[in-house]
Amino acid sequence: MADRREFIRKTSLGAAAALFVGRVWAADVPMLKETDPQAQGLGYKANAAEVDKVKFARYAAGQKCANCSLFQGKAGDAAGVCPLYAGKQVSANGWCSAYNKKVG
Image (cartoon, rainbow, N blue to C red; front, side, top):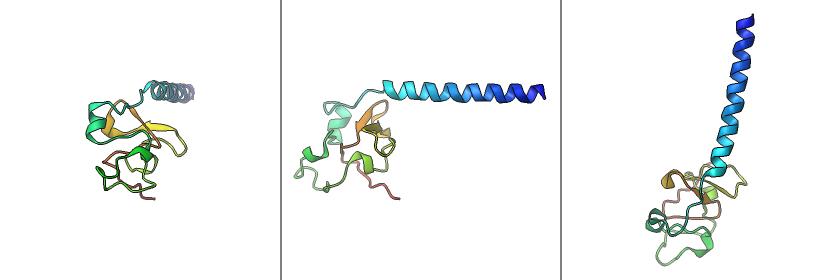
């Protein structure tokens, strides 16, 4: 019985530590800058309204990072991680040419 209590205590502490570290890490992730070479290559704009519609004819009104399948933020987040820009967050209102509509 003591082993079971010890297991539960350690598991609870480990889970709490993982949540804390995850939150601290997310807060430390820098925002992607439009001047970043990869951002420029994919036509990233922090504000989708500023997308060059001539250069990126595939862009359609309403498309933004928040409703892209690659965006890893939660609904309502101002920013979130995108796997295309490892180690950086993108604006939820941003857009790039890799946009892929989130289904569901």
